[in-house]
Amino acid sequence: MADENPKRQVAVKVRIKDILDGRYVKEEGWEPNYVELPDGRKCSRANIIGVIIEKPEATEVNYDHLTIDDGTGSILIRTFDQTHFLEGKSIGDIVLVVGRPREYLGTKYIMPEIVRKIENRKWVEVRKLELEEIAKKHPRKEKQEEKPEEPPEPAAEEEVVTEEVVVEDRKEEDKDIGEELPKNPYEEIIQMIRDLDRGDGADIEEITATAKVPNADTIIESLLREGEIFEIRPGRLKVLE
Image 1 (tube, rainbow, N blue to C red):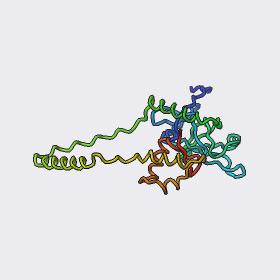
Image 2 (image 1 turned 60 degrees about the vertical axis):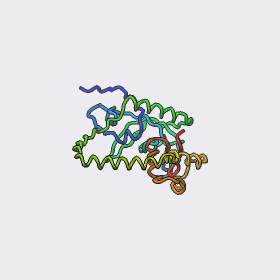
Image 3 (image 1 turned 90 degrees about the vertical axis):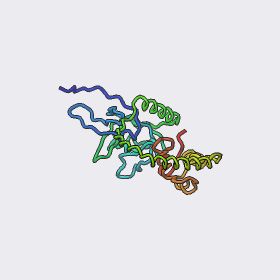
Image 4 (image 1 turned 180 degrees about the horizontal axis):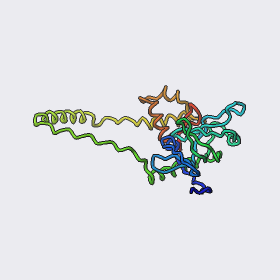
């Protein structure tokens, strides 16, 4: 018989991406539902720090939620009729959210128990370091890909041709010796964000329009996923420092 007074589950410090990539599991009886994280841990209560990127006005009919982003992804915080969670919170605020992951029609969200505004940005850096340590102890379980079969060894004549190609490649490499190495495009984008940020973030459109690196949009998306930068509000980027 299941325990009718189960112990309160520990709130797991976790990235939003791990919640979104995890598998939602429904339990029976008094056992809590949970998300099986990519690293194998079970998360029935989540502890997340993120920036509010969307929040309806108090006069709107759907004044029952907000959306936060931690640089790895964004997730809906559904308060339903508990609107006190939204009071005193604005777009751009950093908040600590503790709550239970839920899933509806394939979309994950958080039912909050705590939504607390964080005034000191140092806690963002502290959380980043905490998550890095957790990732070392609990690495993500990636799917193992089957190794492709090794091709048969080439015939003697083919080997001669291959050697000639290698020699030509080396000649081309010798020509490049002494030439200036290109700058890291990721570092250039990060520096642009710093230069354009006047306190309220740097405009994404301005960055992509003036960036002298190819695929600026793709680089920005990658930096957002890695948590190097975040959207302080839609369309405005800041470097996490």
